[in-house]
Length: 166
Image (cartoon, rainbow, N blue to C red; front, side, top):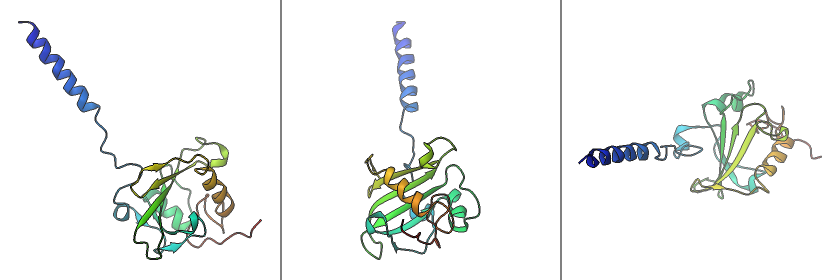
């Protein structure tokens, strides 16, 4: 007889634990509806001289929009820029994404400049290629986008000029 109440308690505890262990309702590293939730920070579809010569659209979250477009204040921690990459000049079908996110000062090796770079496929699944990400991103952004007039804090905002080849 004493067993039944104990079984109910055990079942209740198991139910409570299973609820607390559910996956969060997180959409991932950037919103699924990024075109609506973030701001397009450049003028539409543009051919990128990098990013495998793909066409790109750049979206910014609220923290990145001002520094990216105005280049007059530092990026706050959590500022994020998303490059949606396309194969056509109308930017109709996403091929992949590259996400840049500003981190706390000193949380990355010095050559990463407190940014993290990540690549995702069209379904928003992360692509892990440690030979290319973040090394290729870092090398390019350090050369092209370190400071005005070429960039702003290792980002390549609108109006940046191309540096003279080394």
